[in-house]
Length: 397
Image (cartoon, rainbow, N blue to C red):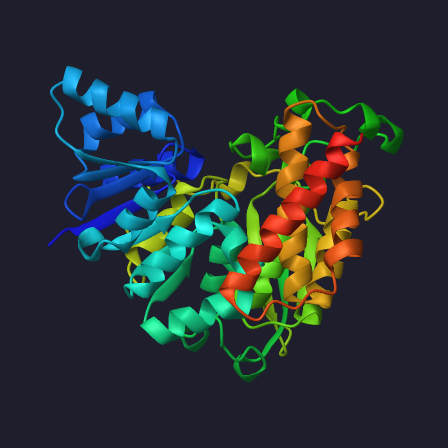
């Protein structure tokens, strides 16, 4: 019997890779539902090629255009509009496995809707955990849902941990498993070797040009500042029930070693592979089994040197801010995520400069780092408050 898939963020890079894995395994998976922001052309292709029963589009005007396009092309599909429509398909009991690949805070409500129906969720939306952390896993436990990591680094860590830890994400006992340290790797982005004084001249087109991975603009900018790694640091803490001292960030420019786990006996387990998101997606979809992903294996004889280095916090102040926020607590991580989303959007739109991203994020911690939200409702309130604060700061620049 085929597994039904609900794909949130279907037209983005993770969504496209997920569709490739589904297409490579037509006897195992079928696309039941899909959601996107506004990309009518891509979603029309998805409807044509995968025949989902339900589709949701955040942008209501785009949803209307998609309905017209489906009528014109004689395609039958239930099309919903707006944020409520996305939440509705995530909550659909027939929707099966949920791949959560919507970028940013807007991805949290549909993920929570999937949690509340007890779904198995492949989580690529790191912001969901950065924003809600322990509260998120409280909901997972309450409703009997299951979370599997799709981020390549967290998938790698997951695969390097024993089954007892894999089956208890959010509450696993790392020390009881003999874990000494989680080693979270990152490429360092496109500006790893650029002279520091030249960072002030970085343009959006430069920042989205990642040397290894193919990603969307927001994640590409986050990778260049290493905020992406900072958010993953926070995500790793919540996923694996780790302390700040349990996780160490290591810069690995080749992106072949996707992360590692060191043990108290001196052993280090690493997950290696070609840098392609289809591999961790296939692992999450098939767990505990494996399926073809369309990615070839590593040719070790043709590999060049693999190098590792400490992150330079002068070059990557956003990484340092994320680690600071992690120590401060849930309010700080929620505030940092909101500020970063606003700052990156402003940078991509030409409203602020590259180095302003870190400055705006630091302002959010100064203003809101001491907040202590005790419910998901308070988290959403804090998120909105920080966004307004940072938008006002951008307007003053």
